[in-house]
Image (cartoon, rainbow, N blue to C red; front, side):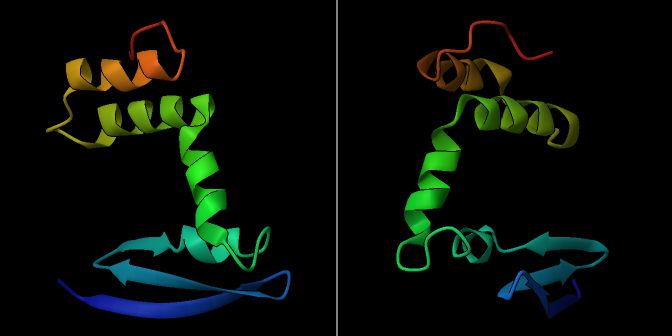
Length: 87
């Protein structure tokens, strides 16, 4: 498993990236620092509680995670106020 770190600059904000094999990941904490430099973790926490984010994560997991458990995920969806099941 080959790993490579890189840095990009967006709107004067340095964002770390990590490439594992051929998949590149960005650091969402670095992105959140654009909004709140002192406490980027609160920005990420608020984003993770957003209904649209939860819906997106459910769809993403359904498409790309063969071990995803949609029945267990239903609890998260209901808690977020999402009523329709993941496709």
